[in-house]
View 1 (cartoon, rainbow, N blue to C red):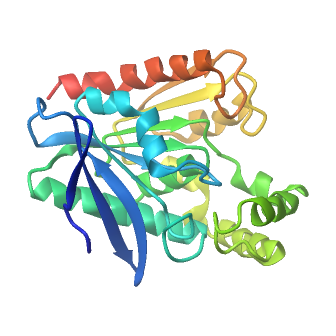
View 2: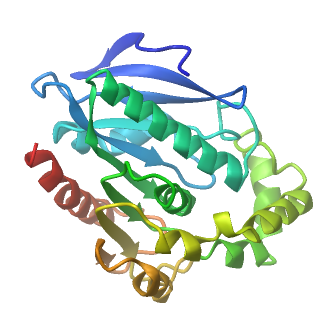
Amino acid sequence: MNRNEFKKIYDGPYEVSAIEIDNEDQIFKGLVYFPPEEYIKPCPVILYFHEFPQLFALQEIVKRYKYLLDLGYAFICVNFRGFRYSEGTISIASQVSDGMKLLEFAKRMAEKNKFILENINILAYDLGAYIALLVCSKSPFINKLLLLSPILDLRKHVENKEFENILKYINKFLPGNIRGIENPIEFIQMTREELSMKQYQIKNAIKDLKINKLKIIIGQNDKITPIFELELLNINIQSNIIMKTSIINSMDHDPVEDKEMEQIKKEIIKFFKESRNNR
């Protein structure tokens, strides 16, 4: 499963390993960061599901969420297939499959006494949130799920007339960042066909979530996912799942100001700190 397992290097106090995960004879790549040595293994882990398009290098993503390492969590982030340095092409199906493979990797690490099996968690941003909800409807191994600025109505964005122009812009100014969108019309049609399938429809996934706790952090002025779209979750989520929502004042979809980032940090720490302290 992992061609490059545990070639250890260190980034400051954090042990880090590059990973390559084989899925359908295509490799997607990532990094595993462990908390400082004062935290004895096994440790809880957070899997990061990235946005569309993925603009930041993996090291930059880890740097942004370094405070989770300092709480005692391991942190895994990858490029799903089709993104940046991973092989393959993008689709909903490939990302869901990669998410399941990443979860399988975390479970195997738990079997090796590196992670706590009962404390595997997901932090997902933008399109990654949509993929994470689909994954969490299929697997019972996720403890907590945090969605940051989630995409919930994916069909709305695919059907938007501007979506084709967005894909053209990515192809022109971010060449190679995403593979599989070179022909925007064909990609849009493929995605429409995927979204017509029940297994990739978020409404059905929400009804079958297999998690303990869910938190959503969203901007008050989010124009991509307006706050009223959260009602989809409120209506369809199971009553036994604890769900909380934190609204960041004046924030749009992407956090850009330092005060927004600081608020998000506080909310993320509050959500994950209890789980770490209970171990």
